[in-house]
Image 1 (cartoon, rainbow, N blue to C red):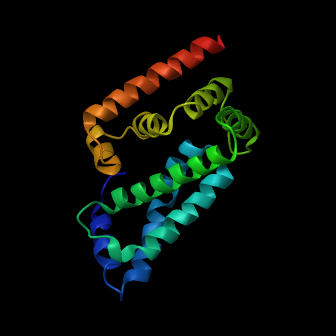
Image 2: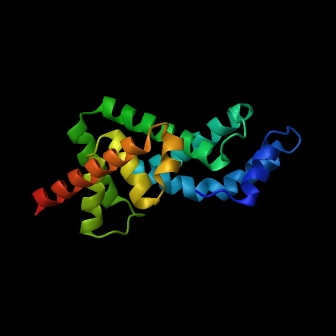
Image 3: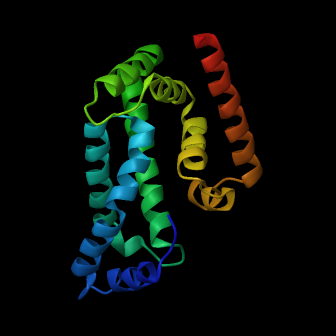
Length: 182
């Protein structure tokens, strides 16, 4: 997510109770699709991503007074989306065993009417689903979003070195996953 002129204007208007509602609606219009796809790449299922996205905007609205405008609005929203996604994934893992979650994600992905990928894309998504949460998040942000490590560092609150290491390990695990499939 890149900051736009509108981003800082929206952030300023969000802090003013008189313009808050209109600014929030504009923020939802601008960021809904981006956040949806970022969430979807983590949880894989359309309905789950929709639910999480709704929770993200509810949480943003409830906590709008905590936004200090010292970071980008997009960074703040992405952090909320990431936290909501991770909470959802952890909840799912606690409800069922890890292999069952991974298998379920792959099956749901292939059955999802919104998934238009081929077998290789499905295998990639299955490999990503098998990664530990942190590696999955870092891989998704770098591979799909082409996010800079410095931006990821701001969002995740960790060093760029640690992020590079997590990404490298995730790539190796995904390559190994593909080797085992062939």
